[in-house]
Image (cartoon, rainbow, N blue to C red; front, side, top):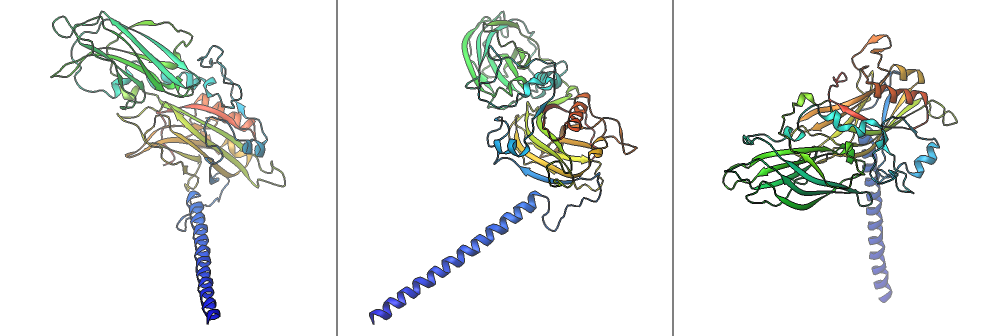
Length: 447
């Protein structure tokens, strides 16, 4: 009887083990199905959709997410990437000076960060943003009062390279305009534009009944050194009203890409009236940082790759100028033209609430021959998903206006864009690291 009881117990245990094994097997099968479904979704082959490469001029697209390979953006290429490519990254020459923050202006020893600040399009980013006018005027509307602006503000700026913190020391104002009966109750409001959200807004205390207020207050901003040249420090002085709208007393906008960081002593600057900036005057909405290379057919040995491949590593955007108040949500599209059937289009994920969105996303196009590069164009555009709208982009091509003898609107690359594309053609198997302004005059021809 005891033997039969033990046998029955062991039999139940065996059945339970079999059921657990069956559940594990089914779970593994489901995971494999999910992985397969995800791979199809990423490559655009979901719900029966297939990618067709029926012509050399319409390359097949493949998406590669490099987040797992490079979790920390700015650390350079991972060892696995460098070993697999075994090629030197090519950096375009530039006559623009590198942003000087520390005394030597060098990157810390041991860092392999790609120094995009050597390109003029980053250091002169704010000159692309605006012509003449206040950047803050794009987001501030309403009646600011009719006080005639006068006076000046004393402040100092320091940047700590190790902690990546910007210190804004608001010291004092002098000879401010009188808002009410020969007096003002002034305070200073600070933004680190283009971030115009509450995260960027900081204020000093209000000083009562004075035209020469002393503040001696320091504001701290956490900002990467790579982003610093793309930022504009907005300091505006206001008269505090208890029951009515506060009155504008003047402002100063400092383009950090043009600031002399060797200057450690406090400086005086005159306050300026707010000059409305027309949105049509904006010729760039920021700078896009990416790396690109062409892999010729058979260049990797044993006949691989079978056809040429164009790799576009979309890294990030710095200094993205929103179209309205608030933090933007953005994603990036890419397409290789000509593409009449529309099979080469790819896009990144949406990055929400950032003026410096990081994508770290690689797109791969195959079906190329080396001769096709002269006739082709890589179009990279930045989009706002809700409401859907293109903020601008870049086009990499020869800029000839012709493709296979036909006049096309998308062969309109700027000089900088042409230089990048020329480097890609002239330096196969080499990464070309670049930063280009996101131009707003891009006429979409690929829709």
